Amino acid sequence: MANIYDIRRYGKFAFLIASAAVAAVFLYFSNSLVNDLSAQERERMEIWADATKQIVASADQGNDIDFLLRIIERNTTIPVLLTDDSMHILQFRNFKLPEAAPESSFALSPRNEAYLNAKLRSLANSPNVIEIEIAPGVSQYLYYEDSTLLKSLSIYPYVLLLVMLAFIAVVYFAVLSTKKAEQNKVWVGLSKETAHQLGTPISSLMAWMELLPEMGVDRETLAEMNKDVNRLSTIASRFSKIGSAPRMEHSDLNAIVGGAVDYMTTRISPRIRLSHTLPDHEIPVMASAPLLEWVVENLVKNAVDAMEGSGSITVSLTADDDGRMAFVEVSDTGKGIARKNFKTVFNPGFTTKSRGWGLGLTLAKRIVEQYHGGRIYVLRSTPGMGSTFRIDMPMV
Image (tube, rainbow, N blue to C red; front, side, top):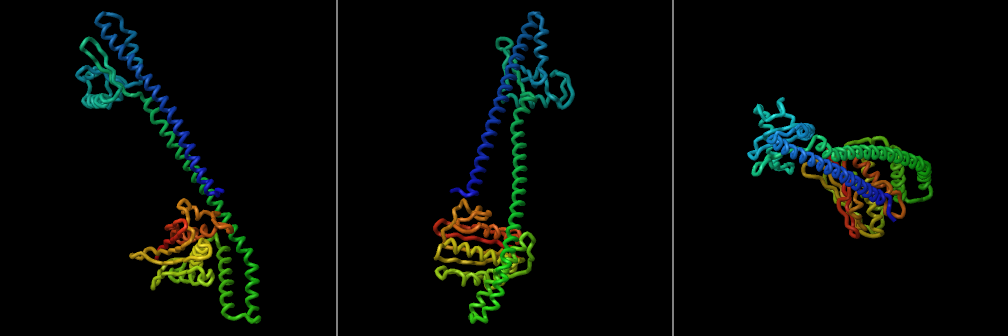
């Protein structure tokens, strides 16, 4: 059965596919409209060319050309250039010239003439050219640009799509921010309630710890039990303070990692070998030692659960050569993680265990990244062979 994150992932894919389909349909109909308008402008220019041809013929025969001139003059939107065989401009209409001038090729200023010649060169390589045969062996050529309306319609769909994408992005991030705020509120409330519920049994355990020496329990056992009770009390205290920034102090990451490994060594199955590789010098960091120690413990516990009874866990701590970053790696020989879940494992509620809330790695990520400015992630993992989690911590 698919979990909530698989369903959410499939929902995102479905939304993207639906959005792409809507955009494709929108672009198809918009392009169809543009093509229809382009064809209509072509027809108008062909009529314009025929009128020009008839004007030349009628002038030779002395016929009335008023109607033909009205056809020419009605074109107030499509920029046109009329040239002879030698590409000399005979007439132009509807061009926005750099300098004011009458609609004639005569008495053009050098700047206007250069502008029209540049337009002519660009139109010469376009399909917007109509040959007008004036007489046998004599032709004129009509060059025309797309009207302002057609140009606007050509880019309008893409502008609208950009606006839609911007709107969707704003809505998405607004919803995401609201969702994260709600998750944080629920998380803080759950944590404080958990700490409250743990308070009474922890107080009872502490009271019993004071009575155990009188009952003949040996000191070594008492010492280990006391460690666990104190650790439980520390965890409850951490949970009660979630939602407020922890106190950061100059700490030795080497001591923090070593303390977590030492604590876990006596609390896991003897069939699981827990080893660590630590440097012989201090790794200075600004940190809340109890919180970082809990993160390492949580990674080790997850590694133990992933091995289902036997295997090995290795915890290592290294630093880069320039002393800027330290790296904690926890590797196991467990069942591994599918690549598609490398990021999902840190989502609240995600778990592969039959028991558990799936909150440990979520809290670990919050502690490392939000409180300590570091990064925690799955470095590598192979299903059936094991995983390696890595923490990047800035040094001071």
